[in-house]
Length: 264
Image 1 (cartoon, rainbow, N blue to C red):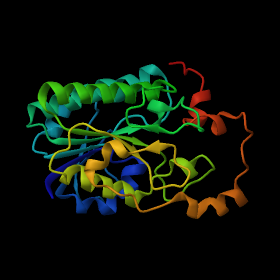
Image 2: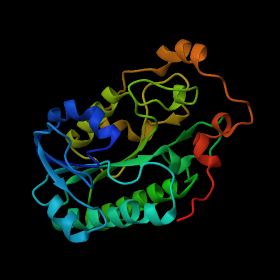
Image 3: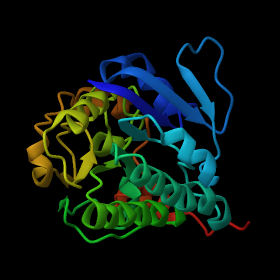
Image 4: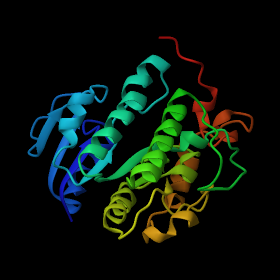
């Protein structure tokens, strides 16, 4: 168990969903976001703009693990993504280098490979095919993590999160769903495995319809336990099937592949 885990993006939906389970990872939590602490939060909370290098340096100090969920999590303009997702990642890795290289769970995204088709199965070595500025920013973050690993020995797990919700919401999520319980179990493995390295891991449950092969991350010992197939009947009965030429049915990145370039 970690002594103190830093969780960035702690006010976001994913962090709020797994918050009750984070005590399994560390004796103490340091939660951070650009937003104020929610009412009733009992853990240490630090407001921080990831684009502020000095603030991020102080944020990382004293932590022996980092769950990096911070930044913009949807497609947006380059200018908005630049500060949190690109400058912010640089600041985080520089702070980690200066403060003993705490292991990092880096929340990357399936949108790094969003332009693969849904009839393709890809592994952790698949070349990047980002589907927008958000995917590009996560591709950049993975590159930063790899450089810091090879140059400084900074260990990170590059977790390409699929769709982490309490249950899948549409037909695409029958392939991409990542159960919150499987997310926390993966985080436990990332921080506990004797040697992490800098692996790519697809953040996805054991779904029958999955497009992603995690054999390259087998050394983590992580075995997801949930399967979106349990919700297939519910989705078939309540969610219209998209047309076969709809990007939601063609590309792994779904609707992100059809997003226009956002203006500032």
